[in-house]
Image (cartoon, rainbow, N blue to C red; front, side, top):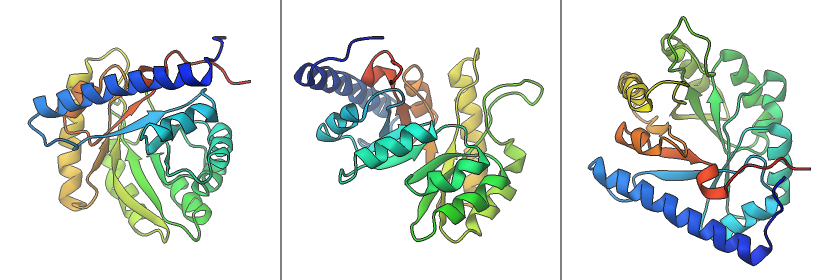
Length: 237
């Protein structure tokens, strides 16, 4: 395991990495002919300590992504009082959905009906933003998680009918082994169709450290970046 850097050195490393990523986002946004500030950064802190999250908050990061419930819950509790929006971006088990809704401000991985009721119950007393995760994999190939595009209308209707959930848009991950530009081009078409029925659900979360430029070119409003900001992942004790 990599030895954690002392506080000041780690702050400098994160600051430099953040500056690089923000520059990439700004350049890709401009290249796509979109206005400055049109794309938001979600920093994915999986396997990194809450101390890194606090440093990131001091560097102006607002949106933090996690994809393991136990780790996310602990970090959210550790960082109480910071001005952060917690995004749950990992595959979500229905028996953990209610617990996730108790601390997550945004749940990006809703891909089946069973999750909607559980999230709504867990979010009682607070509003939780929801993104529907759509699969970009061919139907005949096992791949990333996500709903089939044809199932999005039913899933969206369920979220719209929930008391404490707000339908905000879509999330997707480029399939493994495929040109991300082609995958995100398909996503742009799916999104255009989705917006006809849900014009207020304008969020499109797509793109990670290696393919954020292609995602922004296809209309992503949020990119989820981990290693390009935090470095090589290390397992927490």
